[in-house]
Length: 279
Image (cartoon, rainbow, N blue to C red):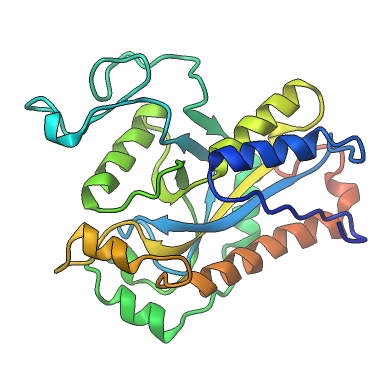
């Protein structure tokens, strides 16, 4: 923790480690986190139909990609498009969806998300030769854009999945679990763990769920480029070898830093209620 009251924590990879880390922090008696703003920042895969390498996306919805049933794709019945089935259902995307759910989706404070996006939408992000070369290999107009700041929802799972067919599943899964309100843009591996811990902490009066932001910067596309298979593309996608690994880390800091700086520099404006909410 620095002198401005900014505390940093590295949760570890995956939803389980994130949940354990944030719960441990939230129960630490040294800290009063009841008015704390939480900024989850990390790298992600991005849907090339929605954004480009090095871009940074603010999420309003965080959807879990693990809670559910699954059968091997080689055994799915005719007419099924996926072997993933919602928890306590018997076929893909079966309606009606259970409400309330059991942690399949989390909606963040829309006013706070909009405020963070408006504050940062014109932040200049790095565009490197490696990023330019990679994005030119994709057909989608959004994938070919220079890095930019956008709003877009995220799918969180313990499995690092990859490929065009799983991208279709991700888009449909996110739509299903939010009644069509969310738009899948990025995939990551921690955020539902963090949100579950913060939900429990909020119920215990130790955190405020209305003060949570999730920012994910694109280190790689979530699927293969034309001309290669999903397996070949996944083999290229290793930590430290993503098409935009370091630029994504920089983008997450550069965009997130603006929000953190605004909150700490003008704390009197934001201490009692989150920005964007009526006074």
